[in-house]
Structures are given as C-alpha cells and as structure tokens.
Image (tube, rainbow, N blue to C red; front, side, top):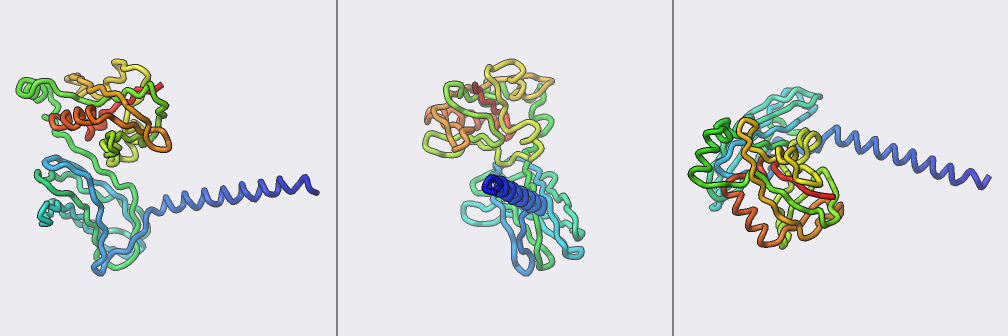
Amino acid sequence: MHKSIPSIRISVLVTLFLFLLTMSQSVLAMGTALMLGAGQEFRFDLPLDGGKAYSIHMAWRTDLEDTTITMTLCHIQSNNEVMKHHVSEHILKPGSWQALQIPYVETQSGPGRFELVITAEQEGRYYWKDLKVERIYAALETSPKAVSDKLATEGTFYTGLVVDARHLDVRRGMSPRIYSESGQLLYGGVLAGQDLVQDKGVVGYGAELTSELLQRIALDSDYPYVAPLVVEAIAVADASKTGVYLSAEDTQRVLEAMVQYDFFARYAVIFLVN
C-alpha cells in the first residue's frame, strides 16, 4: 500500500504539468487580450531610427462583427509634438486571426521616439500577437555601385559585429543580448520576426571566424564586401548566460561604427563561443 503512494503522487504531478502546459499553449494561441474602442487605445513604443524605412506586421482577432482597426505610426518629437507618419485601416472578420501590416513607411529624421497606436471602431475585447518590425533596405543601398561610392567617399566601414566570447562560459540562445559595461542594452534583436529568430537567429554562432560564418555579415552576394568589427566580451550577462558585456572602449567603437552603417538593423552579429 505504501509503495503505491509515490507513483500516485507522480501521476498527479504529471497530469497537473500537462494541464498547465496545455493551458499555456492555449493562451499563446489566443494572443494578448485588450479592450479597444470608446476612446480606449493601445500604444507600442518602437525603437525605430529616423530617416529609415520599415515594414510593421501584427496579427489581430476579435469576436465582434466587421469592426475596423486603425494602425497609426506616430513620431513623438522632443517638444512632445506628434507627427503621424502613417495611418491605415483594416476590417476584422470575427473569429479568425488576420495579418495586418504597414507594408512600407519612412521615418522622419530628428530627435524623438516612435509609437504605434492601435484604435478600434467598436468597443470590445481584441487579441493581438506576433508584432514584427523589419528594416527595409533599398536595392541601391547595397548594390556594387553604392558600396563602391561609400568606400570612395567615407573610406572603409564595418559590415557587422563579431563578439569573441570563447574565454567565457557563454551559451547559445534564441535571444542573446549585448550590453555596455554600464548596463546599457546595445543589441537584443528585439524587432526580429519569429521566422528570423527560429530559422536564422539574431546572431550567428561559431568557434572560429570561418569564411562561411562571415557570410552572415556580408553586404550582398553580388558584392561580397565583408569587414567585421571584432570586440572581446568582458563578462557574461543574464541568468541564461547567453548575453555579454562589452568594455566602455569597445562600446564606443560599436556606436561610432553604427553611425557609418547600421549593421544591427540587419542582424549582422556573430558570437564566437566554445
């Protein structure tokens, strides 16, 4: 009789675990619930750069009949003046997920921050998931002539970042982050879409800097200009041990390189790990 008690407890725990797992998967499938309409709105802070082009994608669902959702990208300037960059309306059919998007928008240069504002025609409960923001590069931006002109006028520039962490206990992960020595988040791939995270990852990993790995930070296959900025991690970050800290000197080098070419926006980052 006593020997059966542990097995009963294990069975109960396994059942409870499977129930919670099923519930969590169900919640993820439903998305995040919020109330919209009747003056209620939802705002997302987007870490966009001025003077760049982006596409913005989200999935939305509601049980309301033929309601309209409006997506507005705003530039909140330093004097708190609001400039609307893009406004688009989307009709939602009840009961199913719909992919809504701002396919192309150019942000204004200058100080300030960017917000995506969501409003709805009808008051009620809505669900959203899979916010994805992608930088759009013009075809001419990485063409052989554009690269040649940039090299001629500005000199050499870095096309990607290589973080050497082989001397540290850094582990591979889905969401590795790079911090400055003072704790400032420099890179985390926060705008990367789910497909990119799963298929390619926000960083490339390797034990050695091979020519194959360097393709990660090449500008274009037709013009394979590759110039890695190599820095050395000084410490492991995050409880998962997937992030790293950079020295103040290397942080400054990264920030200066980003002025010439925004390789973070193309996820042109490599971690060297053991």
